[in-house]
Image 1 (cartoon, rainbow, N blue to C red):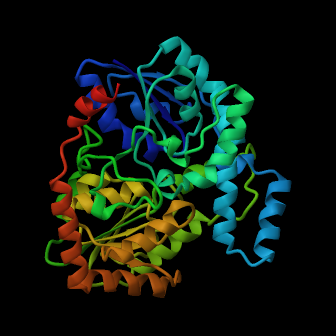
Image 2 (image 1 turned 135 degrees about the vertical axis):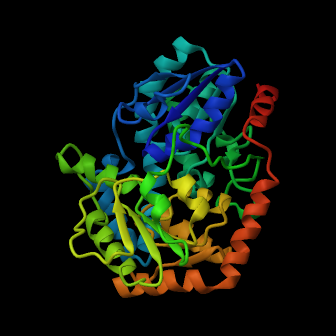
Image 3 (image 1 turned 90 degrees about the vertical axis):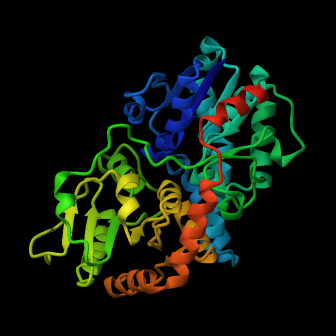
Length: 403
């Protein structure tokens, strides 16, 4: 069986696909990943082929001044800015972004001749390529696929289908005709509009060679351990826009400012030990109290096994890793699906959303998360539900049956 993965967005999208790609390769199937040059390194340690055929883009890079003005008019008419922005993203993902990726990925697919496409949740071109080739396709876990409303995508995709000579579809769920893959139990699903299909256990060993630095063994164990991290997506967007190659039509959070607020907030948690992962962002560490330890990066799934509370941006990878390790979350969302993820975490009783984003507000939310026994009990229930799911290796048999 030949399996084509498509991977766009941030490194977290590729990391979500790694366990699945490994399982398929280990079972003797041929795996090719079509991705961007920046994400190719995510797969370099694994027994898969990589084609860096997709240009560096973000959904925001397709937003023209005319589209931005449309959003502005929608909010003037009374729509919530978040709802108007979501509709704009649906337009971009199902239109110009899908067409660009069709042009980039179709030649790769024609040469590779896949039997199955496992696509990034943000990649709608793979749906059309699979229809063109007459093969099945499924989305892999991502925050974008959790947000997507298929009914909102259908008009744009059908317009593109007509342009490309493909059959128009009546069913909005034509984007998941064979289901979707998730790493959380249905009772803890974060998908707002897509049905549950194939659920497998979230892996705690995404990085095969991950190990905690030796200084972690010297951390005090007579007090709660808190991890604070900002993720990879926002720093990546900052990197893309810093050199002037891409402009953001709407204001984006300043990750350096957010990191500064997080460090100031956890500095007040004197009863805890705190590790702050900066994702390589600049951080002023001068004068920090001794209970705060700042580092560029940590093997997050590994460290979460010993963490009592996680101050997180709310990316879907971090959410799943927290569920797998029964780690209560204080979610400080920044953009995209993180807003919905924060609301869902609170709805499920797995933690708190940080609504007051001042350092005082962040400190208060982390403290509430740490001291609420109901949150810890619910996090433990989520982990038990996770452990009832089959290992990712069983996905190979399921996918073979689909093909």
